Length: 333
Image 1 (cartoon, rainbow, N blue to C red):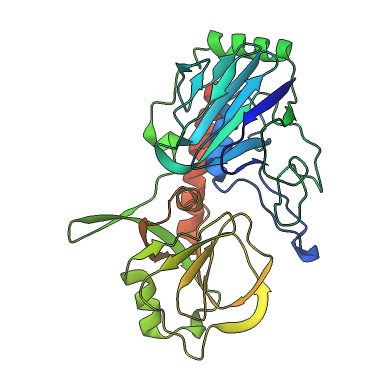
Image 2: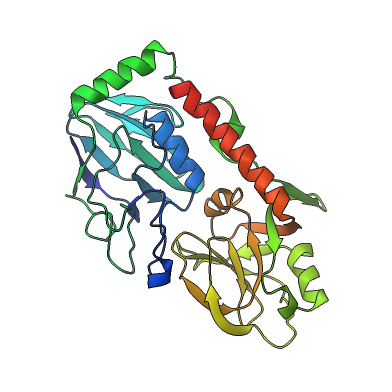
């Protein structure tokens, strides 16, 4: 089975759960920026492995023709999907007959939408992952963003897709997810002077001592705005300057998704999926894994705030998120 790309959208790439275990050799993890939406889409499409490769679309989707019968699901940003010009739901399994065309428009909410298909996108794996690394030009389809005319292999044929759809229908699992908490990970909000601002939880450090007490308070007591040059690598923020003791430069050390570096101008930068493996700016905190999917859905110009939590609280949030995914898995099993 295959999917033909008729229109690719501004940035559509093949992504999975990421390329783990190669950071010591300088290779980035990559993978879906919104790992929660990746897993939701895969589970709803009938994939037992929630980390199979999907299409990640930024701000606006494209148009795709299914060459054989297929089952697909959409999660993350809502891209106003039409299947053969008829509206179909997001956050639900959908059957696509052979030859049908899925068209996706601009995101009504969020920034990144995910298209999963039963069997997964079956491009050749590179170092154990199908994720596209745009900088190193590896993984995905020739290591690049998709363009019109591309053909994407799928890891299940039409007969298997029809059988999976019959199973989904028999279980009554073809209805959309009704619980908003299952569609997107929950995270707290900050209310101040009538303003509602998304609040991202972060564990302090590892270079906390590089910042003044006033700088630490600035990080958690003020509001920041996403700048226009945010991308898959990082969310660059603008706001109050975070004070340091002797500048932000350090000897380069390891970076993870969620690391909050403070650049020489005192502005925070939050690392996302395509982050570099090492960095030479001090890190004031690390956004917890349970909140990174929500961060990946914010658009430039949106405001956000931070609060410190403990490692135990971060683990508890991760377990809550895993429990929601398990509920979806049980529904589709």
